[in-house]
Length: 531
Ligand SMILES: Cc1ncc(COP(=O)(O)O)c(C=O)c1O
Image (cartoon, rainbow, N blue to C red; front, top):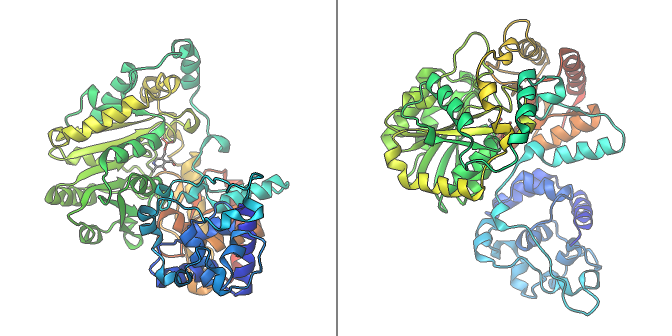
């Protein structure tokens, strides 16, 4: 089925039946179907097409013919024969398997009779074979680069300038990589032509080991350090090596969504614990405790946090350690923003508080050294490695399979981690990140109907919208409306696995003049916006 035709027909059926995306999501919930807002919006924007059971559900919900929705040349009206399998009973979605269960039970996603229509038939008359994406991706979402971003790209392609406050990529906003890093990489490039050892270059891992010592990570040797093509690769690798189907991992809500995506992709279940806006966005320990089951294997901590900018104090980290100890859980700590801490505060690595537990700590140079494009990050195993011998074997296997991470980028880890840290100039009064944080925090809080907790670290702020005032029930619609009206691109809270439509994330990397323009436009937009 053509994505464009499907999207066009879905949009027209939704508009005919006066249904918004959220209404379809609710209808799915009532049927016990696992169909999220992001799925629907991807269908509506023509980004993907649904699986066959989801298509049948949509057709039944919108009271249109399955085949018509599929893009075939038939009337829109639903008839008894609308059911494409010819089994009348299955035209009722309540008889359909859930999307999740279909993922495991349906070996094929083809619609046999649909594929015999003229528009999808190859000349010889044989049904045309279609290639669909893996069902493993059914529960994988990554909205930071999702449908709203696609719409922004479409607008840009037609010549519209869009102000992007959606991606934490320092370089395009004028944050310079330290000269020494560039010089050293250029100098070493001729020596970086071959593969390195799969865990990484000795010099890079030695420097990371010394950095780990400074952060008081216990029981770390050079063999416990793995470089990766960014932290991203290692998040994926560490979850793939760990999870069997159904294993649960506790992940913050809001989160950096790659964690949830990688847990789900590995066959695990991401179980979200709340972070509490009333308490500086710290993890809600009671909620975390209540989510632990006998399937829980690990707790993920993102500190400093993306998207909230929170920095967790020792006492909070200690409570997480106590909980992990009580339930024998592993701790994964994403600390990629650990050098971007403001207000004279100190970052504590949670692993330093847990010498008796097995911890994996992640960091890299994308943010602190403004070289997100070079792709280099690392993970460090620490504490009680005895309990994780088999898991470490799995990690080593996957590390060997990807051969090694980008060698030129590894070659400058030692340079980057030693000596003067230019990032320190950005995070003190007078520095760009500090001053931009001050500006955005004050500006957002002065908009009627918007409140925001002051970030202590990183370069994100996660403001709250008064949903009653603005009548907001769909945060993706909010993001799209803001994009269309003001040409500002933000990321909706739902993109960070936040459960209410009442937040969005701003990346405050642009200079203050640009942020001024953005907040003036946002103020104007919110003065009239009602969803
Ligand atoms: C919390 C967090 N972890 C990991 C990453 C990915 O970093 P890398 O560039 O090292 O892959 C990001 C990127 O934005 C992030 O915000």
